[in-house]
Amino acid sequence: MGRQLRVQRPPIRNISDLRDRCLNIWDNLSPVIYQGLVASMPRRVEAVLRAKVKEHLEHDLWIPKGKSKGFWVFVNSLE
Image 1 (cartoon, one colour):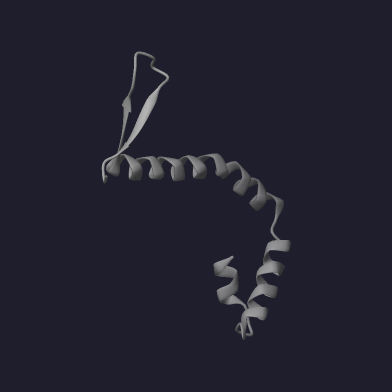
Image 2 (cartoon, rainbow, N blue to C red):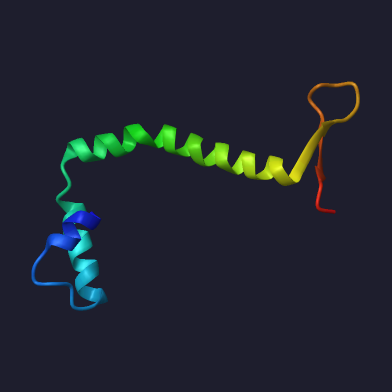
């Protein structure tokens, strides 16, 4: 969308013009683009989750509690 906005003439004059042009581009996307976006979502969500887990692992610690493997306790290392 950004590429399409940059090449449009006349240049965007205000926020309303930007909104209208974005909606126009979005409304005219090809089904192939939609399919690609939908197909890429699992990979994108996984990447976000991995980044968040990595971020938390750098600051926080999860340790097992008790004899059951199903119970874990969150320990914030910053406390």
